Length: 490
Image 1: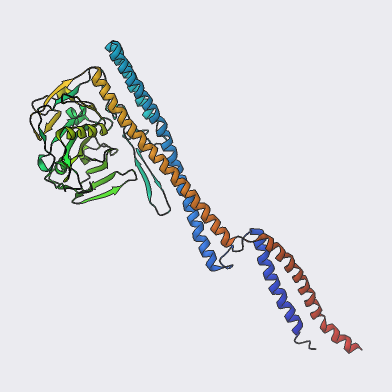
Image 2: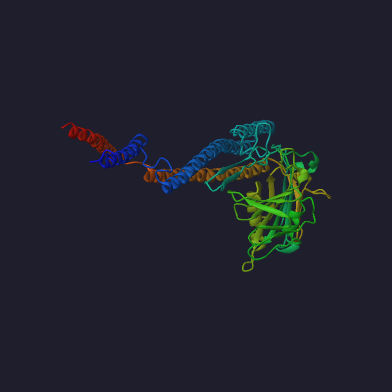
């Protein structure tokens, strides 16, 4: 025995310290429910869990944005349904008036009421400053599109809004006095369909006659339908009809605009960005913009806006629209009749009411068409060029024209509603995917860091017993010096 070095006490103290340390960790695991709650518990697992937790937090932000987008879409969808109902009632009213010989003043009063209902519905589709049906910003509408993160990598879901106001649907001044246009194509024997000589139908809306006073809510729009060969077969350079028509709507008309085989554009000093709805926006260095999107038939529609024709909110007041109507390709040559039929479809996709009669007369209405000036000797609002054989243009009016305009508006509204519906489904799918991923990450973090409370509780009881035994062992070891004193007394 030695009173200077108490080996037994040292051993007992070491065991006691180790037991106390283990007991502290076990108590922490029981109280926090985690086996790894700090970097000191397991540096590698802690680092992994922190990364996963940050991803979970990011997904929470993504979920919030998608929920907002969902509410915007739900509001727009509800009001779009209301507008479609109004348009259906309008069509029924016009048909009944035509069949029953209703007084025109009475009919026009009803039509005016319907237009007001449409505009009220578009105004009511605003949700937290976002309106997908207004077509332009205002004091109450800050945004006409929605963008929301669809994942934690920063990729965005973007949907551009549409103009579903009465003007946006091409129903400006709808009444029995509305002018439509008829184009007699019976004398046309051939339509050019390539290069600079391609047949082009150009339509100007009512605001085009006074473009200096146009507004974003009632813009001056010139729409050119270019009967062209399919983009997959040719490349339209700047000198051809499509590229030249687009360039005519830019500040610098000499700007080279090349239409590629896939419908994309090549423009010097321009950047492009594609939205989730398929719209590609080209931003030129001088501030001009061009948007490109395929219509329901796959024809590319381009819309050019000059920077000088934007209002203070960046909304376009003057637009040049070009529709590249695919009427032929290298292996198939369509007849003139088939080409005109394709043109009628393209007109419908653009929001016009168009109908081809058996006698070759093409009637066009709606789209806020300035048909009253269709036969002007200079600056005519309707032009059909590039045909072999004359095409006679004349104006028309009456309930048939009104019904055709309403039909064009119904078709346009159907496409708007469809776009919103597709976007709603997409957002719902993104929300589901986001939630599933978040749950998977949460489960993964739990598997890495959560404690087995049943095992930890049993271990806690064991360590508490072990600690008591260690204390007793240390007490016995420390009492050995007293035994030496007993020997001395003996």
